[in-house]
Length: 336
Image 1 (cartoon, rainbow, N blue to C red):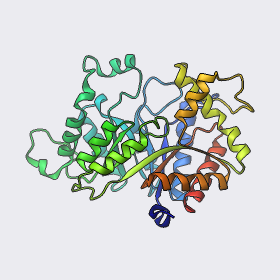
Image 2 (tube, helix red, strand yellow):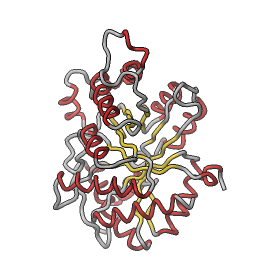
Image 3 (tube, rainbow, N blue to C red):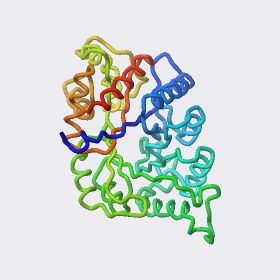
């Protein structure tokens, strides 16, 4: 067994607030709260929302609002962003928003930061206006956030109130080696979006570990891998339920996004050869199956990556089946 297998690793939830066909955003938010409470009882460490814009199937366009909603409806689970797309926002506003959240829910708020727009270029222009090169300032803006949160900024001309002096963990999110280099240089924990962009995952976490510089907040590298999961009582049922996320990802590939559709008995005739190959590549790091299958696949994945934490996202049409999937994944994680 690997060292991670001997000691166990943390497991968490990434929620995109995915809207299913026949339901509304209000239904989605209600289900998110039910899932967060379920995850808290099952021992999940944290519950994060991702920032996306102009996507009918994704209702998590305002993570700070949803973070407050979930934190207020739970007791112990950490809640945060996975992540806030920092180039879309002023560092001061982010510091004040998360300072407010951390003041309301002390010791429970995480701030994951990404540099992508979380949308298409047209929508990004609607968000950023003429500041379309904001992503180039991402390293500087991360430093600015750290300054605003620091107690040493008490005599600064611009201060975050609330926010200053609060211990709000900052994470660097990414899907490339650039983000890995930044996280390593700043000595921050690193979360990789392997649930939809697996290509550079192994290279990025290797680079991060090799170049990591210890900091005041982290003495050794910490890798969080985000993965897809569809667990059910049998392999057959899980494969059936997983046809929903496969159909959803076809929309990502073709640009014809849709609400999360119900599962189908067969994908034959639904996707082209190209779409199938592309979707299966995007879903490379997915755990689909019954208890024995997902447990063994998790052991293999942890052995290969030595990840410190797994963050699980599950696009499942039926809410009860989704709740069951997270239960089975928690049970599997306790066995690896």
